[in-house]
Length: 449
Image (cartoon, rainbow, N blue to C red):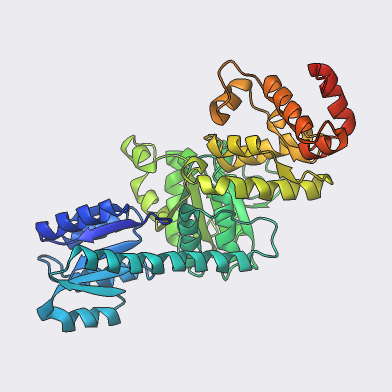
């Protein structure tokens, strides 16, 4: 299937859970199952599910109460109610409460598959519409969230969902995945868009300057304080403050920051005056804050203040469908800025891009495309233009262990010259290099065709 959906089953009947789990897993879905509503709600707060199968009648907390809570947490959740025939009226009522559909017991595997397929299709439609809305909102901007993978569509859907609110957002993900871009997009789509978006890189600020940077200081409050300054919170008043790499904030500063978040007011260093501030906080980290809490380096109460609405941005290796669209997007942008005319990537270069794991994620990909454009002499980026060593190229393009880039280039030139019956201008154009460069390479490799 083109959309590998994540399914959750919440049902206290073990036979129903096992049957649904087996049937849907065989259909290619990722499936989890729990035996009560409390466990189901706990799981939905930790990860995103495309479709939830929910039993109407369960001990402890009823299916209707679980449905209401799910709709509060995520108005776009797709819930299919499971009910006995005697409870059809109740199931119909759940549709009014926001359930997508209901599945009466007993049901066959075919009934189950059909209901889930319809729900998954509807979920995919929602994700695609969210992407379209975001694209329209970003048409006039230079930075956009680019991608076609299901993973990035889910990120976009969450952005659209939270942007219009004032909720505090925590963006997580590895270095280079685009956490700041997510934060900027939320601000750009929010009612605060006309007010400042202020960035604080918590990873580079030394503790002695941190408080002054965030809250400002008065003249004479410490050695070197020659004038009164505004801190980042005051500068962001009415807008959004983005606290990047929050795991690097010291414990001492965490308690001060917690008070500011709770009271929505700041005091400059050297002043007793309280200043009210109206800021939306978006924070980001590439660290596991739960581990930091266990290690005693991050306050649990501050984590809960930050983690009101979490958005996780997956690494590029987990969304390979986004690699080539991003590479072409960067190529187009660099062409405009550098006034070049590099229009494409060779097949081998694209194969390398798709197979490489990109430990530096989108940032590394962007740098690789820029470097390749500088190296490129023609209109097509090839393997030789990439700033990776031969071993990495061999590993990610299937070149033989005893092969080399020079060997690959020689073979490609030979094949192209034969293809065009030795016509050097046509071969050079096809290879994306000028005729002079082609002549030099023919001489270098001793080709006589």
